[in-house]
Length: 461
Image (cartoon, rainbow, N blue to C red; front, side):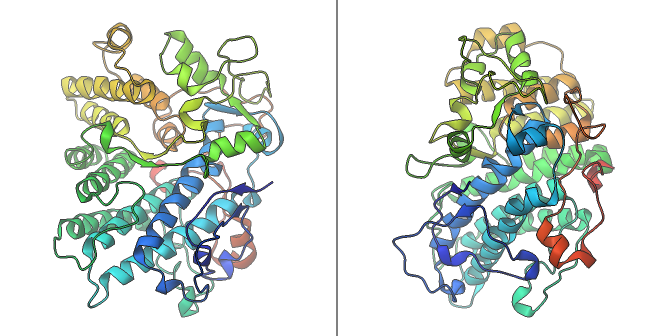
């Protein structure tokens, strides 16, 4: 079964090294452009940019990554075929090839082309470079949080005949994420540009929003280091958050359309092997959360029901319009997530009143975004003035972060929400990382770290 997603340039699938040789499960669809496939560097930046953005929305958010870790987080449950094996924690190198390879061939290499082109003499366009740097940092952040160590400093040197790139530690990857974001802000502040940003399918070239995205992504990853950096992580996260998203209107989203459908919609149409997870549905049902009608569809009896992890209940509710309609957007980061980051950071620094305020704002932003209404009475009854704790911050962030990678990152970092083991689990605990791609094991084995899916990534140790 192949998933089809419309990317702009067929010619942009280029092999960096033997470690990236693969046949993707996705198809490139292009009937309008006649681009020389041997000259990807000649593609204009305004065409490279949307192709990268859509690849990120598809691979990093819309299907294989989110679908798998949302199953592990019991927001979904896999009820058939590969999704059912994932529900029982079977996840092999062959399962991640269609995630791993596009990170390099469709995202990072093309972002580096934009950076090179936007930095070339006579073509200096620092705003374009800054946008690419924000996207590169976002890609690296999501990828390393799933895979840990990765090829990076040598990972894009296939044209220099580096065919077996070394792996950089996750600590080094994180250093590069922060450097990219700092450099992005400087470039986005630069008003001297030969070319303005075009082809931007996320913010339409609005530079102020890209700056907010840079600071918000930085806040995410500063907080991710709380087990390593302690209170310094909270302070750094708050400093970045102060310059980040100001409302739901700033959300970092990838759009889809009827002719180019949302990836979960494609998956449900073509396979349909997931249902809503009982843990999430029960949390929503317990206090009549208004988001349930958008997160889930009703089952055959007209109720919202979830499948217990690993129980293979195909009669449970399917995903709802929030994340599986043809035009549902995929979420790189949201304002709601940023306010939850603030809440946790303030709480970690002992500033309870500010933590309370940020927590309430985070839930309110999610409810408004999902339902389109403020639902003030529900917030007053269930959220507002309920004393803030780490447990309720992360549990509400888990609900708000449905269909993103963040609940999985937060669960590994904090242990919340407390999740039962799946029925029929083949290992004694929920996996704590993704395996490396089978292509890497076949073509770059000498450099691939020896790991299991029960090992912890660096920031979780």
